Amino acid sequence: MQPFDDPSADPIAVFNDWLAEAGQTELNDPNAMALATASPTGVPSVRIVLLKGSDARGLRFFTNAESHKGHELHDNPVAALCFHWKSLRRQVRFEGSVVTLDRGETEKYFHSRSRGSQIAAAVSSQSRPLPSRDALDQAVRTYTEQLGAREVPLPESWAGFLLEPTLIEFWADGKDRLHDRVQFTRNGVGWSTVRLYP
Ligand SMILES: Cc1cc2nc3c(=O)[nH]c(=O)nc-3n(C[C@H](O)[C@H](O)[C@H](O)COP(=O)(O)O)c2cc1C
Image (spheres, rainbow, N blue to C red):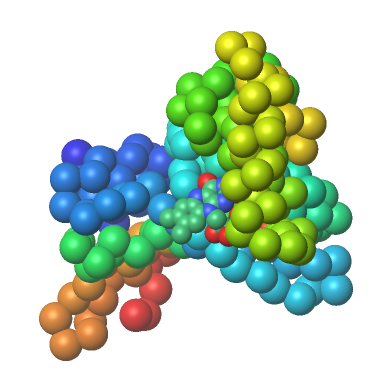
């Protein structure tokens, strides 16, 4: 495991180590992260989504492209992510541009979900008004019957996104609020490192 305050560390490798550790200690959803987006005029919005992969290219998540966040990512393709693992008293932040994943990769992930989750994604007009809970349950029943034994087609609106980080910050709890903060910023192909006051 690489120390997070080593200037030569690969921040994505450090993050993946921390995530794996959180997988051992968090009650549930160690991959849950706050995703902040903003309108073109700078009005922010934030919600939790699940991380579905992190490597040298960036961090992947999946959602409905026609949701509130989907529209913001289309109109203003930048975002910030934040993980907080209470069990480890650690935080990791990311900032960067967001690109849409190709349909092949999105389809592969979509079909790895349970059939119920695929159907739920297909019938949910995420972020738009729903007349009643019954209407949603009915839509699930109707669509399930229509499908029969067929595979659930990838919904047009279901999309994968990749955040390409230009900034990654590690925060680790310290005694008397003397926390450690180390920030990595993209510099060409590598990263520059700076320690910050807590
Ligand atoms: C633990 C947790 C995980 C979630 N994961 C996702 C996810 O991966 N994708 C998603 O679209 N919404 C996910 N949600 C729901 C979102 O927080 C949010 O309600 C939804 O995406 C609509 O957001 P929007 O209206 O800002 O677009 C999750 C919620 C929680 C609490």
